[in-house]
Length: 469
Image 1: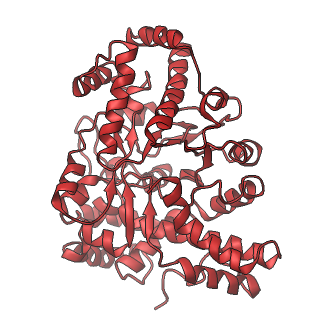
Image 2: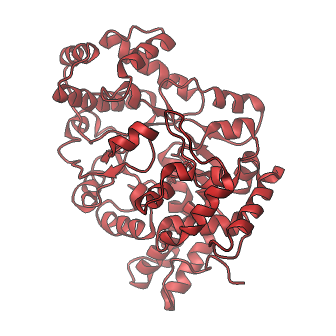
Image 3: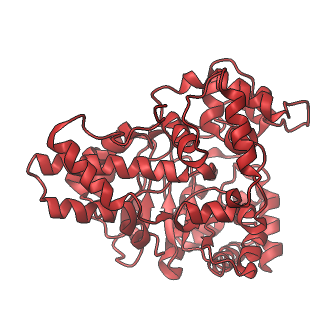
């Protein structure tokens, strides 16, 4: 029976580019995985319990799958997504899987299809296409394997050849599971990353009580500006004690500000009292990006900024199901003007690392590549989220390399909650980069020895360097 994935996936169809891509890929396909930014659950590695049934592992938590099926009329409850009020949702994993299999054709041509076919074949040994007719056989195969010790989280971590993985926790998280991992004596390297959105964004639900809690756990007076800033410093140090090398900032825009200390304090006081002025709330978010950059300059945490997502675009879905259910939508994003206050403050710092992401591809050549191509503090994150597809990755390389080069980028990160798909995502990125490098060699723009060196940098070394891992 034919395999689900082709050995020459994403390479040129024939000729010298094909042979070059094969040779480049052979040199990097087995390199360790560095996963410096993602959202897998540290509880998995801490407890090392068997994963649940195939539906709970592969379908229910994956917003790429949820959004596609929802767009075609499948209700989220039918896919096992729990409602916030506890009303009835499907709990039968086999029923969810059958519904997914019946609609698997919807993913033709998408990166989700590439990832899932890779998972089915390379992780679970399934060689037949997923359809209504094969659904039960696939489900039974996966369910049986998930009960084996070599399919538990730590065993898969090692099988996937993961050298290090970063999870992402909110500023108020006690990092209990990271402590459990550390104390267990397991050699797998799982680190955290500092995500302060809940205590820097006045529009985040429960913001005022979040600040109260921040004060409680740090012993700082978050009723005033100085205490609030010191609380962030303490939390960042706490996260560093559990391996954090980065912070992570998911703001609506890339807007920054650089207010005087007095003006920042006045603004904080108004926000703390519950200002409903949208301009003030926006300005506070902007100021806090600059404050976080200044803290990164002082404590060495790599700063990741990924703006431009209109999160929870459907208020009815948000009210019913909560966050991360597929309704985050890209928006147009300005960087040149928005980042200038931050860059005026810290952009020339050679020891500071700020990694920029975007959901607005129109900014690659016009804004992001020129900025990263001159400011020492800036690096470009890889094609992200809606664009971590073969076409998106190709566009990223084509539109940024000519201005920023390769070495102002940071390799690849998978940014995923879907643990089984991590090897698939890195494999796709490595294949796309090898194909791009092969084209440059074939066009006599790059020597073959340089391409081999770059292939290793893009697959492995750049991420380690950029994230200080």
